[in-house]
Amino acid sequence: MSEDGRVSTWTAPAAVAPVDATVTLPGSKSITNRALIIASLASDSSTITGALRSRDTDLMIDALTTLGVGIVPADDDGTSLRVDPAPLRGGAVECGLAGTVMRFVPPLAALAQGEVSFDGDEQARIRPLDTILDALRAVGAEIEGSALPFTMHGTGSLRGGSVEIDASGSSQFVSGLMLSASAFDEGIEIHHTGKPVPSMPHIDMTVEMLRRAGVRVDTPETGGDANTWRVHPGPVAPIEWIIEPDLSNATPFLAAAAVSKGRVRVPNWPESTTQPGDVFREILALMGARVDLTAGVLTVEGPDTLRGIDFDLHDVGELTPTVAALAALAEGPSILRGIAHLRGHETDRLAALTTEIVRLGGRAVETDDGIRIDPVPLHGGVWHSYADHRMATAGAIVGLRVPGVEVDDIGTTAKTLPGFEKLWDAMLSASTPSGVGS
Image: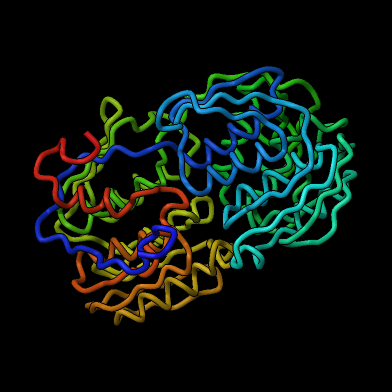
């Protein structure tokens, strides 16, 4: 155990029997952090119920309170919050390794009166930010630097207007500009140039949430130009936000059913959602699992034979570590495509996944835009997390079938799911459907 309470090395428990558990998960990080930004610009107080409390969301809360926004817990565990907008001021923002903080907060900070400095973890300093910072400069912001650390010189307002960007590295560049744009004098019109934008469901999520708050948004689907999004200036309505469970955080637990020939249920699964994690249902079915969504409960039953898969993950790249772990344990090769942009995530996820699978005796090679995995028997060893929460949970999945897998820095899962290893242990020890999270 490290000084900050994070587990340094964790022996991933093997599944000695088919998993049979119900896993109740906290709220979506992506929805929580978007709701926090939107509520900070509303005309009155908003409430957020079911908010995720994790390192990434706490960093967002700290950043917004630094800028002057009032955020007060409305319950004992802090998952219900009241957000009180206020005039934005200068301060020092700590981004950690949270992409949503380093890309969503700068457009808001451009509206502050005063200097706002940004910094983050060492790994965050190599993450690309020039796209969004240059876009903000183009619409009137004064910024020193093109990566962490950088400084925003706020004047209390931002002109806004039309801007061209290449968002092929991350959909967060588009979402970050859109979330605060209704407060820009001219709103914003974003013209994407370059290869297709990855993780489009996250942009859909941003658009849907802005519209719920009364913001007018034009998209290619509503008659606008292709690869163009426009947010009109205007007021933001206060909203009572109810946060969905984090479907991407659910995927390692559902994968546990798939690799152990077991059964896992996740309650409160939405019938309709913009979360990319929902696509995992399709992936599991293609790999041979039985998948059922009835009365808000998603049930996954593992197959006798887990099949390899050829799948384009361009829109749902965050699922790649989980799918790669499954592919390494499947029978038959897998090709995961459309994910070259993952080289710029928390770590270079393509290099990390191939390195760790090979380290345990597997066969995996990078392609131009993804990974090819040819399953062979694996052996135990250290699975490195690279300070990446999804790499850590991928190691836990592999460890279900491969004895002796040790995941370094399992505590990095606190980025989006604090207490992951306890939930994992509880899932494995559960002998009845009410064993976990009941």
